[in-house]
Every structure is written in C-alpha cells, then in structure tokens.
Length: 204
Image 1: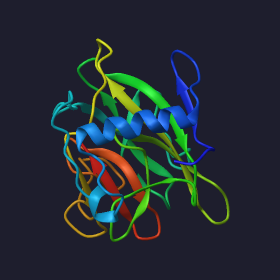
Image 2: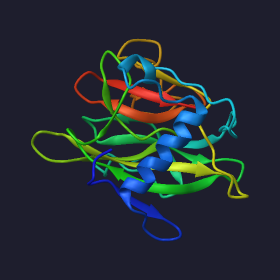
Image 3: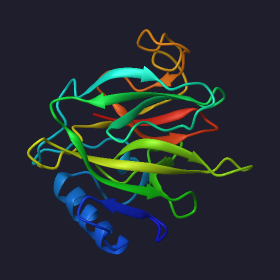
C-alpha cells in the first residue's frame, strides 16, 4: 500500500505506516500473507479469527447506469460492468458494519493481489466499496473497507479466490439482476479487479 493511501476511522485518522504494520501483523497471524510471491495471495484461509459468516452479503442491487462505480457507506461490491458504469452492491447482514475505510492508490503504489494476472486490490481482509477511475488511462483507486460485528469484533476472510473472464460466473445471469455482468460467486464480495482482463479477486 502506498503512502497516498487514506485511512478513515470512526475514532479519527491513523498514520498510514501504522495501519500498514497493523494490517501486516494481522495478516501474518491469520495466514493471509506468505513470502510476497503472487502464488501466496491467490488463495488464503484465516483459522484463528472471527470470519465473515455465510449469507453476510444480502439485498443485492444494481446501481443506476452512468453512476459512479460506488456502493453505499455500509455496503460492499459484488460485481461490476465497466462499459455500462454499473456495479452490484450488497448490504451487510447480521448487524455487520464497516470498521475501517481507506483509499488504495493506483499503480505503482497500490496493493497487488491474485496471480495470472496480478491485479489491483485491497489490503488483506478489506473489501471493495468503490472503484474510482482516474482518467484517460483508466487506472483506478479503490475505496476499501474492513468489517466488524455489531459488538465491534473485527472480521476476517474465510477464503479468497480468483474469478477469471470465463463461465460460469462471468457469463451467466447475475443473481436475477440486469444487466449481466462479471460477479463473484455467492457469499463472496470483490477484493481486487483487473479491468483490461476482466478478472476479479473475491473473498468470503
């Protein structure tokens, strides 16, 4: 994560380097980071933390055409249709809420996730809430959020996977919503994106 990343917390603003160290320590303890190679981040499993429950992402809906690629302040992104300027957002179930919000900067300072291809993503255990296109080059910054329970207990991923640009999830009806777009499989939300190759990195 680059020095441009902005961390917004309910209790104030924290130094970026401090949050990076904290996130790194959490990820190491939860088994989400290896030696930094692309293969290490293509699949991760947390075993010692409270993980996001199944059916945590509910009330899926499509944003209006031409709107910003952004979900509401207590939602996460499930799918995206770049050419139509639409995304699928999901509300949080079980009283879950956003714990920390930060903006991950575009390349070369942004967080990298996945493999074949490596793509822009959020820090470990953060989900995408908005994709902010930067201009003619169409680089993006990402608004990323971590989640916590109603009792303010931090939540981590159960697992992650890379969803390529082929069936079943990229080319089928989108949870009964229109238009058809690239989505994460059920119970998952977006944590990374590669625009030109239509790849998503997803987590539950």
